[in-house]
Length: 333
Ligand SMILES: Nc1ncnc2c1ncn2[C@@H]1O[C@H](COP(=O)(O)OP(=O)(O)OP(=O)(O)O)[C@@H](O)[C@H]1O
Ligand SMILES: [Mg+2]
Image (cartoon, rainbow, N blue to C red; front, top):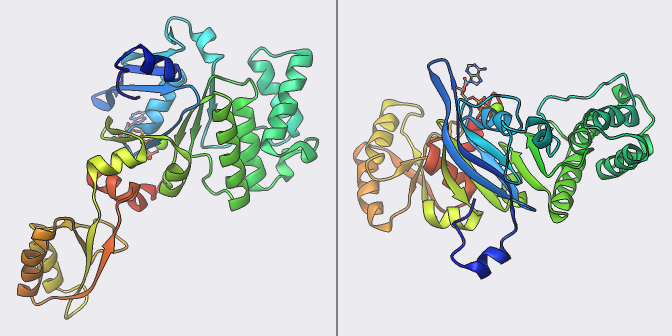
């Protein structure tokens, strides 16, 4: 994911690349879901994959774990090509799907034993991994209860355990905390961090900006089947967004024509928030644009009710790069 190391010393300091996506792409008939993306994920790294609906995240993840056959490009795990050695490579991959993929009529031990066996684990090694995964998921106490009786959060934690019981090198999580209570969410976070500390490479898709900000040391933003930016959060903020002033407009008649005109006029000088929950807000990044912006709004007979300053964060970067608010992107997910 990062720039190529410049010299031997830098190369030695960088953890090894666990997974490489090379010019990876997918067409569904005439529609290109993913163009040709390049991405490296290093050992111990938590990579956040963010993008609005239809950006191509699920298609990318599905190709990365061998569920969808790419139209072009390759997936390498520890340098081994997934297409050439599917069994060997898939043994190194773990997927935690967004939909629950556990057998609710079985208990946690039975579920994890089943998934472990699918990956070729047997006997004492299997039992050891099952215990390990139960412990990670915080389910040791409830391990012998039928999972249909679990809370939503417990089922999610078991779903996570099922994806990692074979201790893959690369763990891919698709929206693992949707609909999860805060306690279970923290547990998922802690588990992911612990696995990364142990050297597992993690790919984490989420619509929750705070999650990605808190958890991920690298963030890749996808839009329209392409990766439009990749880097650590401070790098992305520095490269793609600055703070500025936020102006909240107040129309003489709410929702009236004057406001529409003012927003259209403001668009020449500022960025519209494009957040459906806050349609009357415009953002001005450049101080030199403030005076003409205020004049343009006033000319339409619209008042500025409030001016506040805002700091750049992942939301601002996302908005700048995709033209969509994350809250928008979250809808229908
Ligand atoms: N099996 C399929 N057949 C045809 N088109 C598909 C198929 N799967 C995905 N697509 C299309 O590919 C594009 C990318 O979809 P994908 O599901 O990868 O997006 P996503 O980023 O995961 O979106 P979301 O946030 O809504 O889950 C979309 O236009 C989608 O309609
Ligand atoms: Mg998806």
